[in-house]
Image (cartoon, rainbow, N blue to C red):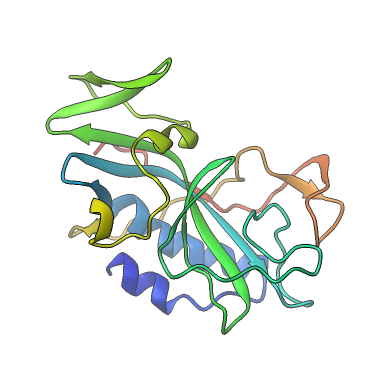
Length: 205
């Protein structure tokens, strides 16, 4: 299934366990079903994807660490489907729903970058070319390749679907996410969040 079609069919979830199952299915598309093309120069393949989901409903599943959500009674506009959202932790691909009142996004946690037959690896302050396989684990470095535009034909940034065989990945807890003392704002404790909303492709591209 294509990524746009997959995210369009997503309709949220009423429990953490239900979302775990849905994110496992969606992860297969992100990890195996395509790549981000940047101006026909770079191909960015997602190696680890982390999901974030926050319901704006009082009785919904809350994820206070989500950056793009209503805060302090301020109504934040919903992103269009498949917007690239840059924030302090890196880059998300969003799939929010104003109709169903939830925020949902996929953080690009680790990734491979290819330029022709070369791999690009971050080194100090720039990406450098490598002949051998390598990947990057710092999402914020994508700032030098992406710039927060919606995925599509405009601005030379688009998602390219490729044929793939769906593979179920085992979910793991997200990196650097902790249980919050509050459901309305992120007041982290020392307890690590156990929601298994992170998925990694083990094989190389």
